[in-house]
Amino acid sequence: MFRKVVCVFAGLALFFAFASAAHTEDRITTRGVYYREASTRIVEPMVQVTKTAPNGFDVDAAFLLDAVTSASVASGVTTDNIFTEYRKEAGLAVGYTTNRTRVGGNFRYSTESDYSSRTLGLNLSQGVWQNTGTISLNLAYADDSIPVVSDGRMQTLFGGLLYTQALSPTWLIQAGYEAVFAKGFLQNPYIRVPNKGREKPPDKRLRHVWALRTAKYFPTWSGGVQLHYRLYYDQSAFVDKPVDAPAGNLWGILAHTIEGRVYKTLSRDFELRLSYRYHKQGAANFWCNTNPAFGGRTDCYDPFDPYYSADIKWGAVGTHMPEVKVIWELRVFESIPLLYVFAAGTADLSYGYFIQDTRYGNAHLLQVGYTYPL
Image 1 (cartoon, rainbow, N blue to C red):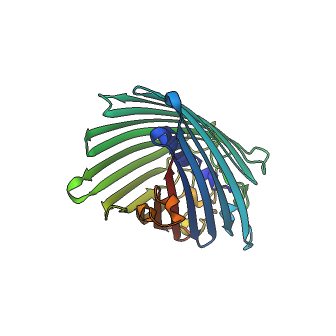
Image 2 (image 1 turned 90 degrees about the vertical axis):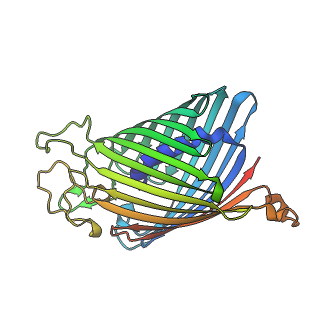
Image 3 (image 1 turned 180 degrees about the vertical axis):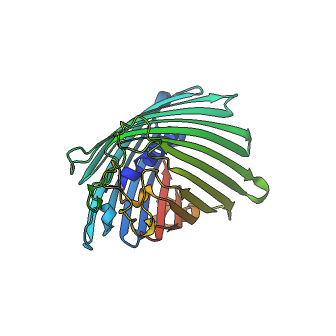
């Protein structure tokens, strides 16, 4: 599904964040995700195994399956016919830790009927200031193939630097920067612009992300708070512009994301998390559509414009997502026949309502997970 063209960069950052943290404990995690909006339904089971080996080595392996049922034109459907497509993804990460230093490598492979992706990464972290702080560096290269078009290839370079500092036993801050350079086939091959054919955005893109996070725990009320802020900006760096292309930055999307989380221990076995995320994105400079809520107008493009699109993801977008999550330590099963095998694990259940000002409408996000220590 070509939503991956949009999500691959966030996926890179998330994948390597997990890879860097994989050595923290031995565990097996199973998770199910259900996403539902007006025209799309996604069901995603996942399993992840993390194990620390002797002599400082650790291994992390993960597998997931996406089952996407959709009638969305942006997903490749030109009529109201419903279709289901499957995406399979597997990842492997290996790390080595000595004293305050950790180095790791990872590989991820994802495939579906009209898309395949290979990602190779390296991560390095170093403890500083008597191990109260950590500097982490993540590097990655991804090669994506879209066989339904002759020029369907996208290459991505990723680099991220993150600094984490404990200000006290109950207060943590983080600051990070990420840069992603992508070139090649950046569009959706199924979207057509009237009188022009397949959409054509610039074929190179340099994306910047600056992120801040703080987390504070309050022992007196057995709870904590987190605040996240993310600033995003992209530019048409290294683009070979046609002579009739507009001057300046062809991309220029500017976005702000802010999220707050509140954690509260309810009892020995239960924890509650409430969160709210707000995202506001401006339009790309080359994108002139004037009505993104209904798919956009395309008559604003000049017949000789070198870049054009009817894809609303290049336009202005605003989203909100409140979410509630319950975490349950399953010690209550210790004395129950058959179920006692689950007593050492932790279950979690979350529900989020995704509100967006696009024609796709609002969506429901349900997640359930179980983690068992090894």
